[in-house]
Length: 77
Image (cartoon, rainbow, N blue to C red; front, top):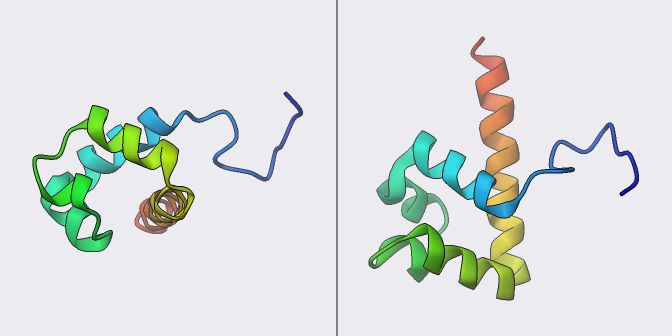
């Protein structure tokens, strides 16, 4: 793997990103922010990961929300 110092997603696994988003927002708010069925109907990490790995546009939204969460967290410190 090449070193990417300016990429905050480098080296992070999708399951880690999703777990941190769920811990921060909860499933209900996550489903409101990103309206996809795997977040709004019987959500689970496993089913969400399966969908996100097959659906690039949904994964991009999740990664974008994660980056926003990081920015907001740094701003509030």
